[in-house]
Image 1 (cartoon, rainbow, N blue to C red):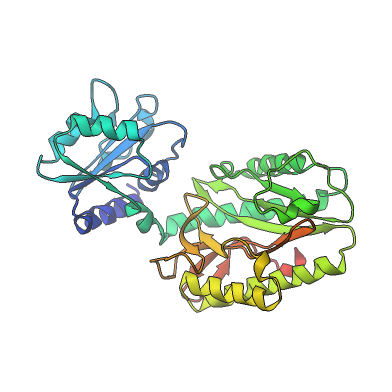
Image 2 (image 1 turned 180 degrees about the horizontal axis):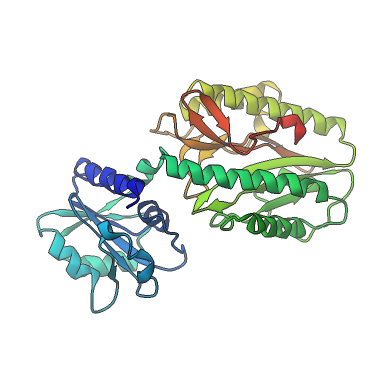
Length: 365
């Protein structure tokens, strides 16, 4: 039995009374993966996990049931009309007790249907398991570290191939193919490689297109991969040809801001303090209005997770060892160009460790 899986379930069960719940119906694909170590599709409803303070039952589509036979502590059962979820809930929970559901995942139709059939009280909840996922255990760190290694290797292979004439979409396809060749499971859900060139580098959420790369312009490459469901995140901006003085100035400013952010991480500051220090550095350099997104975010089973690095976000989570975060300062000059620099970083007692830059200096990339 996987000790990490039993420990994660146990931690969940211990937290239920704090939320005045006797059980939680887990439906989120990421949360199901966290508790089973098996990927679930975000496009289809493949399973539910009913966790109470002392029991756990996994209800799975018959199409996938055989994959879960080894998870004896979760008692896998087929999810069919002959084995309705509502009956199992009423068997496990008394009518006067309260069952939590994941309000940010369960569809309204599913919620209404469940509420009409069960006798127990139902309470919408948010972030119960996400909060547990913030601190990564050794198995999770192993998967994320591997994803970061594959990402770095892919960038080292890709960078020499970015030349005038190649399209943004071609670069994206090269990334995906090489990640698969190296053994990655794929790219994080909803996060295909993001490639921007020329003036489009000033658009943080530009849609990768068939635009041809030209000499004398920047190219921004933002991508990651998954290993056992765990993600990496990485961004580099390069210049095709001889960099302009303006580009070099923005490049040095963003990289210095990145170092300021990492310095703040080493002090295990709050996410807001890291954002404030980074934002103040860019503001003092004269580009405060051109830094238009968060300094960073957490990541793991999802590409964006808590903690959130923005001074206006009331982040309840203080930075702690074994959190994994992405730090990504950027400056964007509308109609001209943009520059972003990002690494995935593991927080440790000894200080931040750059997982996507294990053997490289910023100047080398």
